[in-house]
Amino acid sequence: MLTLTFLGVGSAFSKRNHHSNALIEIWSTSPDKQSGPDDTLLLDFGSVGPIAIDQLKNKPGFEYLNRGGIVDYNKIRNIFVSHQHADHIGGLEELAFMNVFVLSNGNTEDAFKPRIISSMNILVNLWDTSLKGGMSPLPGRYALLQDYFYILALRSTASGYEPFQLGGRYKFEIFPTDHIRIERKYDWPSYGVCFTDTETGESVFFSGDTRFDFESYEPMMTKAKLCFHDTQLSGDTASVHALLSELRTMPDEVKKRTLCYHYGDAWDDPEFSFVNDEFAGFAQPHERYVLFD
Ligand SMILES: [Zn+2]
Ligand SMILES: [Zn+2]
Image (cartoon, rainbow, N blue to C red; front, side, top):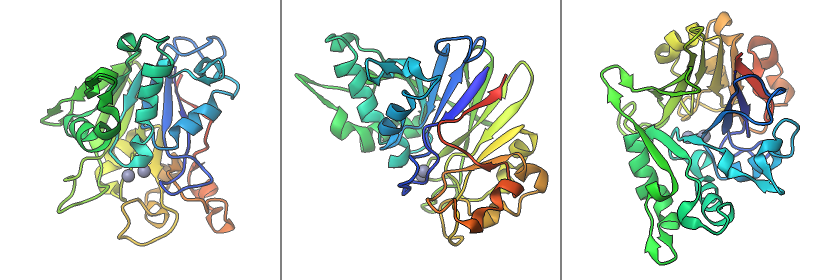
């Protein structure tokens, strides 16, 4: 079984929801039969991610994340980084420092290292232009990204990026998203993910941060049993996110299978009540969605 739980479902500026980061869990049986999952993957970990996961550890079914009242980051075995905005990476320093300084039982050289996964261009920039300032200095030496993480850089191929797998059965394929253009489409790296259960062929689409680009995502979204799509409630087409008004132009049968996430704080205003009828609704934080059973 593969489940997805949002730590938060909010936009970068949300104050009522945490950032749109998600915990993927792999189960050989199911959450009610196991004390914890076989494997885990964080889809991004933004600046308020540590607060969100601290709250999640106190929820029924997530006790395995609780070690004596603090988050047991050793239980986070993989982290996928979709792009470098702080609402997606701002919690990584805390996660790494917790593993090295707090959860290592004083043996910092032997601290638990999760695997960090993304394209090569994201990983190089992630260290050089985001994490290095705070994470390079350690007592007595300078550290590198590989001092905190095992690195899985997904190689680009003729048809996209080499997929990675979890649980021997679940395949994760990343695709570029049209989030921010410097000069042209895809020139600033950002990614979404398509999950596939290789035993059944079922798939789930997760947009990542993106402008509306149904033309590019249509083959994946039409095939997927469920879609999660970046959603900006209002604004104009100069936005770097998909406007709800644009998402409404997708075919009904796609909308019915689409949960909106990465939304602003006005989601419960009556003007957006149509979302629950027209779409699968607004994705909810701290709810464990079964993607593949
Ligand atoms: Zn974002
Ligand atoms: Zn972004």
